[in-house]
Length: 248
Image (tube, helix red, strand yellow):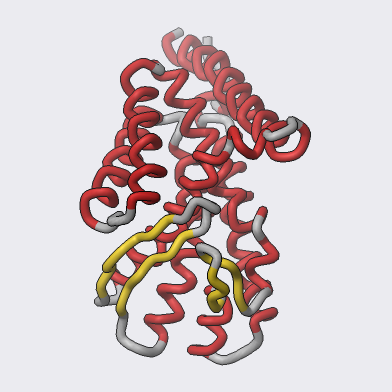
């Protein structure tokens, strides 16, 4: 009887989790394409995606034995991670780290949010605080990230488990979609960063490892799409207990 009640309880919880995920997806769709000035409402989350992108560069540089010196955010939601790594493949890995960080983090969040939303939100808040203390040294960066940190702490304190779950699903979706949504950046030699035209990350990879920007862009787009799909499948998959047959 206990296993039967457990299976029924799992089935009762799953629709709520999936419903929140659907609401988050619909909200993103409406704000990005249908609601006038909806992109302004999502502006803080766009900054968060940029922050994850630049942190991906910086953390990858550290993992490659280099230095992460500074994270710069601009009002146009572009960013720059100043780092130093040994020449060669480590430069290419650092460039790719920024492009893959949002979909990778998004996929992880989507897969784990229903199990530990408060813990994930606490980790995000801790990472934001750490970056502010160690790497963000510009007024724009502080003006952008400090309110996001306060928002995370507010949801963590007053949002309850449901609020934390919805917030992390929203964050996970936006991050998982980030590189795919800006897919054009994967196929250009340069882009605007803070009003200055700079070589793109894919151009940096091609310069170090050789090959065409189109080839590297297609490869990174494929990986990003696979991470997005993997995150969604993990988020929507039924719990194992739900799939187990009931026993009287």
